Image (cartoon, rainbow, N blue to C red; front, side):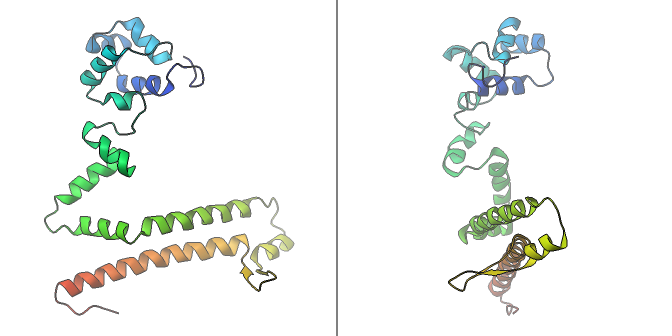
Length: 202
């Protein structure tokens, strides 16, 4: 089998193998109406199908041809445009569809509010900084008292701004993310109570 670096269309070879799954090449060949040697060529990345064969594979395996050749990450045809414009996976899209059928619409309201208030973006930004802080912390080979003192001590720059060391930065960011989620949930719960005619809690 060729590596991705030498295969003619690595994404097709990889996804074609994925479609075969546990079936033997002989059974897959029979199901698709394609010769067994050709199945092997496709899986090994030695050949790529022509447009007609690609259409046959797409129809018989019930997957979009765009997915087969790597133009989309969405394996379900109904999700291609949604995935292309939002970046959502098939699993995420299907979950949202499921939530939309909830009679009380509570879950979908929660998801909408979560996105509208840009919580995922803020969390992603903090997680990126958190990861950098942990990586900076792991660069220290030893944990002698001297190094730990450095890791735990804040520094003040010429402008009077305090720069936290890696350990404290990571802890600060983690606590901030926890607080952000707690504040969001509290506010959402209070708004629910207010809409139900109950007095919001502080």
